[in-house]
Length: 371
Image (cartoon, rainbow, N blue to C red; front, top):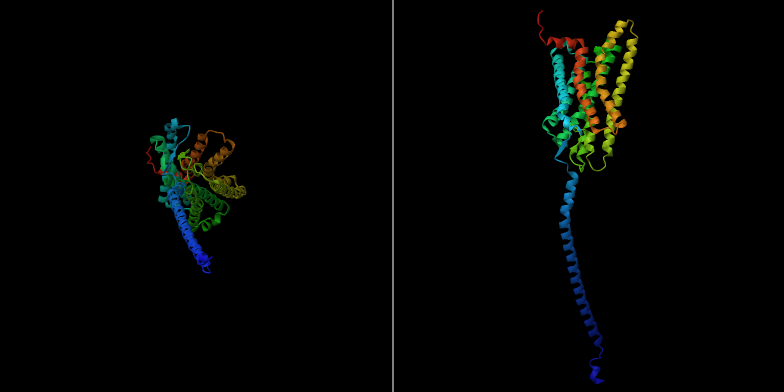
């Protein structure tokens, strides 16, 4: 017992506790080191993963926010072999539109006797027709003659903006001309007091403001899309719906907005034009003599011709899209081109033949040979 008395002593539990505490500290230190190594390894793996995946994410973002550098206008699909022949009536119509509308503008500007509301509105119509035809026809002829089908993305948006905005302006000017005829026939004594220079200016500015306001959203709506269906536009020019068909993603708002604007312009403007002519017809029928009726209504014939030239192709094209959906694409495209070609070409002819003052001044431009 004496031999082990020194080992088993009151102090021996303290020795055991000290040993246990030192081993626990050692284990804790080892665990902390292992945890640090594990965390460090995981952070390194995470860093490597981020390094690999981040460029891919950035690339994907760039893809969804980009657009093609150029679009390719196909012209009239299905009739490519006839492009040279089709270009003949297109070029003829464009030439007539340029000559006719420039002649109208020159005559109205040069002759002080024509500085009246009716002719100011006619000058607006001629200027709009010049811009409308020049926005699309030169590029069409380049497609037909030189196979120059490419158009830059922003060039396409600019063409679209001018095309749709000036179409809306033309509708507004035709409505203003209907109001001019209404005042001239129904309230002839107040004509000069109602249609003053400032009012005509305000009407012109309102037509421009309405067109710009309704058309400006279109380029921005198209710019946000990614075009995954290729750059080929099955048309002769950058029509809004033709470009939308190439876009990926949800295009419902573009479709609804485009249809809503078209219906708003056609229905509203045409409704007011029809109302104006109902009042005009009622006023004409109340005139005493048949000669007076003929003369009063004769002043409206040119305007009615311009209205029919503008709205008839629109209505026919709209009906064709709904009734003849299975028709060949070139049928719809030809009707759309007819809508752009016909009014600028025919309006100067209508007003040149039917309006006596313009007819006389046009003839006066050509020297007469003495008999």
